[in-house]
Figure 1 (cartoon, helix red, strand yellow):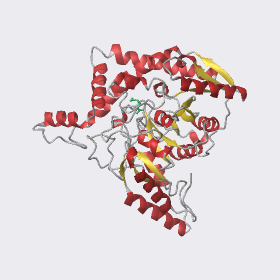
Figure 2: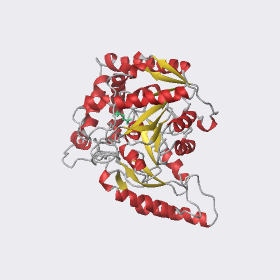
Figure 3: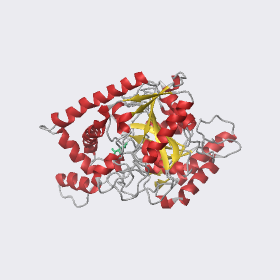
Figure 4: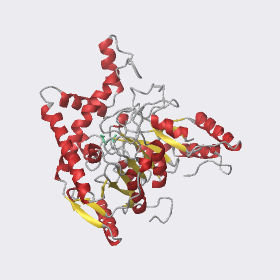
Length: 465
Ligand code: GLN
């Protein structure tokens, strides 16, 4: 990634990114652009460079911010009506760290409202179009982030991944994305979806850039008590020898093009001298059901704070306190948000708690153990991210279960807290990007990224790899 210097000015880089963002307006990537603020910051950086002052590791680099990170710049909507009027009073820790190194937010990008979804179709601001086929979805929830990077508007974008929201849109658009080990990057100042699953990460065009972003953002934050002490920058270099493949994932439910690209990659790895290890992880067949109990339970709790009183939108029709709560939430949330609040409150309610929530938590422990056991037999696991390449706009949005099935291969990592890197590996006959995910044990993120870069496509090299 290019940083500003005496030869390349931050103003030129930011202006070029803003121009491209406007040129691609039809893709509906940005919810808001902040031209003046971005150009002013760029000028400050250029002045520092001219004076010979020290600048950061991301000096003048324009980036797109997923619209669920709080920042003083722009409005933080989480792509919802209920937060549309919200002017955040603070910066998320990750934003603070990026900007301290000189990165410049050019605007805020689209997502499924509150990150609930796998296509960006649940956004209050409309769907984001796929970077290779405008009739298809960008994926989600970080759809805006993925398309902004794929169309080379910006070299990187922030993302959040609760059940696949970085990896799936990255693979639908042929870019790299990392969902770190749970707790690696602070969640402070990020609109909470499901707190025990939420991870902050990034999307970019190569793994070197992702590594730099991780070095900058990883580490303990007193404002997020689930953050881990910085292990990332202290990781010792380790090359993998054994690559696992989850046999339970190799089913007819997965698109043949994805299965084929996985088979090809594995055979390349085998001829390069890696051992390929077959893994049986039958517990994973429950992962989607477990996720769609635990995630809504936490969503119901996290979304209870938006009540029309403290933040954001308040219904004008409300005549008393109960109506303020009821009408504001009823108007302000999207259908999918409400569905999750209802399911979440149901699985937590007395009489159903033991049958659903408690059981799901027990199954989650077994899923964690299954990954721990798997990593005794192999170093990393290579797997599909989603069962299919980018689907058509409108194809699944009215069938929630079909949409949830999208997440069947991605949610397992969040339940187990392990890291995953989405890497572009090929294309379908019609040119749609195909991605895979490389999964590693907790805290292996740095070496995992390095290996993903070795086996993934080189995006900026026209020949591919
Ligand atoms: N698609 C998944 C869901 O809708 C994951 C979303 C996410 O990671 N934010 O829950």
